[in-house]
Image (cartoon, rainbow, N blue to C red; front, side):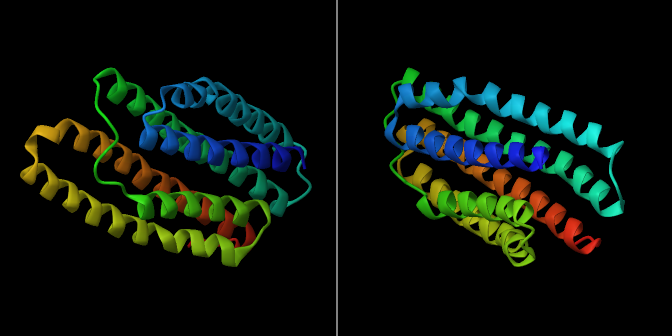
Length: 203
């Protein structure tokens, strides 16, 4: 129960970090980016808390199911912490762009942002609530995110050809897109752990 409680807190915080990081980038809001970067330590500390509780719990686990859940929690927390790092990197990209005097990216990518955010939320809810349909849905979003990422990169390539003077701004966007694509990978890992806990089999 303590591990689950920490994971719920971590899930909510990382989702909030991601949303704030993306908002800071879209609006070139350095103050908001600073909040995201400053709170990254909280995500790291929650990851450590989950790790310590899960390792301690393994020695006291009452059966295979409980041990499988605790081992999975370690991997879930690690992937969630990486997603938090990605949100922090997005906020850092806001700082860099603002420091260089670059305005908001002329080509937004809201669908990629939404898919990455939803996949992370669904994966964590699937694990915390032990909902196999939710976990599988999160896993199945990963190729959808990949396809959207490729489509958006092609848009950027075309934009650079048409407006080479704005290349630096487009590279900012590319960096953020890559972080979103990685978040979908972390979501897939979390969803797979959820399914393994519930079924005892790999996806």
